[in-house]
Image (cartoon, rainbow, N blue to C red; front, side):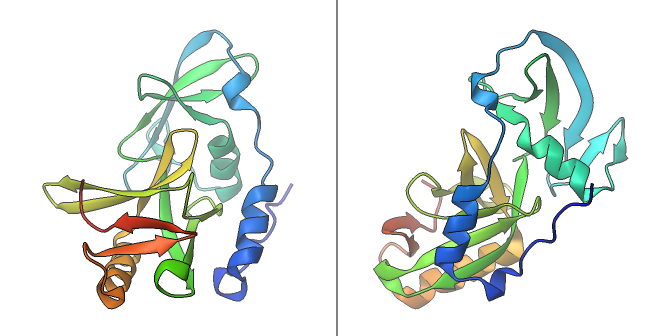
Amino acid sequence: MPMPAQPDLASLSLAEIARLADAQKLPPVASWNPAHCGHSDMRIARDGTWFHQGSPIGRPAMVRLFSTILRREPDGSHVLVTPVEKLDIDVEDAPFVAVEMKVEGEGAGAEIAFRLNTGDLVPAGPGHEIRFEEHADGPHPYLQVRDGLEALIARPVYYEIAALALDNGSHPPGIWSRGAFFPVAPA
């Protein structure tokens, strides 16, 4: 079954993006508690590439499917879970990457949405916070996606965020989305 075409982010309003994000029907992985069955022989690289037994998974529809059964455990590890099995998966940084951003409005009235490498749309704001961590190679921005799962915000998108933060003149520098303020600096 072919994967449905993803709408162009630029052609959507933030209200349409929010409706699409709310309409995403994901499996109830939080309520599934099967026995642990071992390791999946899968990993997600820092750049968002999914691998199985050392080879990249080349079919976007397969990556999208696996991403819907991904869960973060209370100890911070990641698993792929179905009603009958739970398998570990290695995640080098965050399981998703925010690869595109759209902004409507300005200042405290702004709304920001992101497209992930899986095609998912996530509007930033309450419940989908943006945070920053300082690493040896500079700040790493993250977007809360769902249930403890985060997206690393890709460097080009981070530069867009930084430009927004500098343009709006807030102190400390930061961005607004859906009524929430996110300082653009590690906490």
